[in-house]
Image (tube, rainbow over all chains, first blue to last red; front, side, top):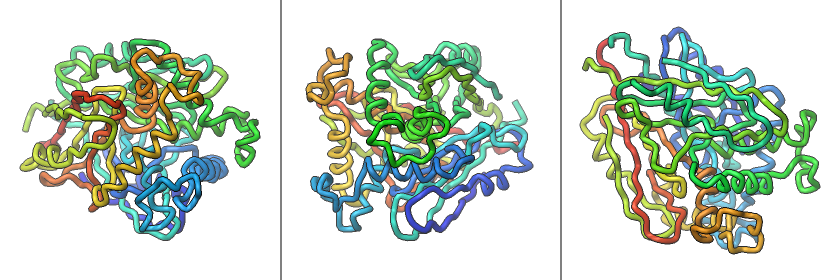
Length: 142
Length: 142
Length: 142
């Protein structure tokens, strides 16, 4: 069973989608949920959903690890015509998940107590982001 | 079919769980194994299981790439009240897999010759870690 | 349903396998595709397939982030006997995906418009690389 989760982001940072995903899974049986983000300049993360400073710290770290291509330390980059935040976004998208799999038990995501599901937007301007969702139910006939 | 693999870690480093996983899969038919770690300060890795120095080198690299929040270079971090190893653990957990998928053929994991499955503990103190396991068998009725 | 995609790489860099994967999936029904690379010194990536400079920039970034073990900054590494590009390859393999999951709808990969599937070779010399492929079709009997 397929779906698409849609989100309009508004600048770099983490956007939680746990409730959307939970709502779609609710009432189903056992199975496996797959999420795959259909873009190469944003990521999917499972991260702590308790203290929002975790999210801003994550963004702060990765923006330092991969500075804009306008930064002198990144002068070797060639793919710059889509803006100084574009190639760093592709790099971050290579370092963080493009797809996630979460086992589902009786309609509930088997997430840990502090785990939430996030889109990590790496671009500075607003973007429409699509996450392909797929649920494969355990076959009841064996 | 669900399970939970449990492991008590004893400080930062890699802990192999390949045999536990193999034992659980043994005797089953074709299908797909999913593992998902239910924490945001530890990761799952598939890595070389031949030379143990690979494991210590991996830990050495990531501890330099993401130093403790007490390090002057990390003074911008805000989420520090759980200890200097906590926010770096979340960062490493964003950079390395939270879920793994391994095809299973006639009860055997389709791993390469040198691949083992590891929990990568990012915290310094002992922790109880849970890995959700799910096996979806190929349906025999089409 | 299992397969193995085989590729001989010729030095570090990205090698696209999208067409091979698409060909194998073509004609099938709905389901989930899993790819898992059976090596610990190469990765799988879903990345932009429009501008080839994205691929060379990705390689340029990661070769700077993780220099050869012969570089003075990497003198702490111990696993060096397989060459100066070996341990950095394991590190990169820990930072980028070993497995990918892509939902399939009526025989088509649900990739975004600019997404291609790549093997990211981290070693300098030619290597034979195997990617385990598995397709689990949605059960038609519920």
